[in-house]
Amino acid sequence: MKLQDLGEFKLINRIREQVVNGDGVHRGIGDDAAVLSLPDGHHLLTSTDLLIESVHFRHDWTDCEALGHKAVAVNLSDIAAMGGTPRYLYLGLACPGDAELNDINAFLKGALAEAEHHNVVLVGGDTCRSPGPWMISVTIEGSTSAHQAIGRDGAQPGDLIMVSGTLGDSALALHLLHAGQAPETVLASRHHQPTAQVALGRQLGERRLAKAMIDISDGLAGDLEHILQASQVDGCIEENKLPLSEAFLRYACEDPALRKLALFGGEDYELLFTVAPEKAAAVAALGAELNLSITAIGVIQAGSGTLSLQDQTGQVRPILVRGYDHFCRS
Ligand code: ADP
Ligand code: MG
Image (cartoon, rainbow, N blue to C red; front, top):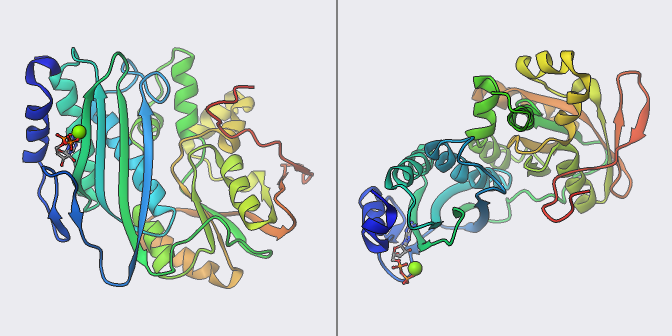
């Protein structure tokens, strides 16, 4: 069955039937606006992301359920990067009329499962026909205790630069897909079904461990530069401290040029944050508690936004940042 055979309102009803409104949802899907509440004393966090077919994903490389998961996960990652708790989800969906209903259902299954996994409720959205590509808009509202949101601008000289998980796996998977090769499962899932570090972000916020934080969507170097520029400090990272997965190392051994993906590749959706040295042990304990690897990769220094890399020979040089920019393809 095609989407055009079902129609907009029946689709919205089907979506509505799959959603359970939890605490705080006074009105969810079905009215002109959602009516919601936040815990007392909390500030509202809102983040939105677009995913456009042929720009962010290709149907021949990903299945629709994974796409639904990813659409929600990338947005959850932004709330995590503020040290917040994600709560409410909005889904804008534009698909061609001849889109297969099975594909839409699979997309919704993936999106709703990922939302539910993080106690996030779908409370609204919009649905329309697209003249061609799928276009997905995801908005998540979350909250933090008043004045506890972690921005990009809090890094100070002497802080350690830390990152969760491993770097470059998603970009390596994409590189292999472009080369016509099938990435192995562990790499493919890092690209198609990234994990948002929601618990880590929230705990770093609640325990006041991170001073500045961002999620890595455009690549380590580019996203770290955002912290350095917002905080007006310099940063130096050590190449041999970058956390790399076994799979990544295997490919990088064969082709050392791939190592740059750990620095410049996008879509890791790990958290990158700075920590006062006296809090490093508490961060390590939190990592152990959550069963996540957290690695100190460098230090913040006085300066005005320059990132340097100490390479494996010990030489330090400024990094020319090449994070992903949708409008600059140099
Ligand atoms: P309007 O004409 O005001 O845009 P709609 O008919 O588009 O209203 O939407 C009716 C209800 O369904 C609203 O609560 C809206 O938020 C919700 N809704 C529409 N599309 C989606 C979707 N893709 N996912 C979740 N909720 C949706
Ligand atoms: Mg509408």
